Image (cartoon, rainbow, N blue to C red; front, side, top):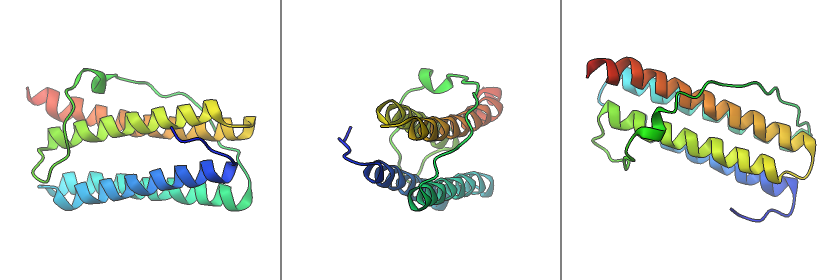
Length: 151
């Protein structure tokens, strides 16, 4: 992980990661084979846009308070084979890629929380990690409801 010299550098990094997530989900939506699949990925792209806006506002205003709760982890992604994103993904493959990506984002924000220089930033990154774990849970539930029930 990069070494950060300021809170602004940490926030700039996190904002960049959120933009990468927006781009990722937008690309998946554009390549989706069904309207339902497209809608799910467009919704996630929009949520990542909101994260980016929240981080930008935090950077601009210097206010770091964010609520932190807990989220259930079904751990489905722990038992699924990695899938490389490609243009002809099945819905199952797209869900796996999304779960793994959200898990990575959760881990990133958890690590940033550990490295944050003050308690306000620690809480902010914990809250962002929680949000990413919610996304992962939604994909896990969708995987369980659609993929596992079909098999």
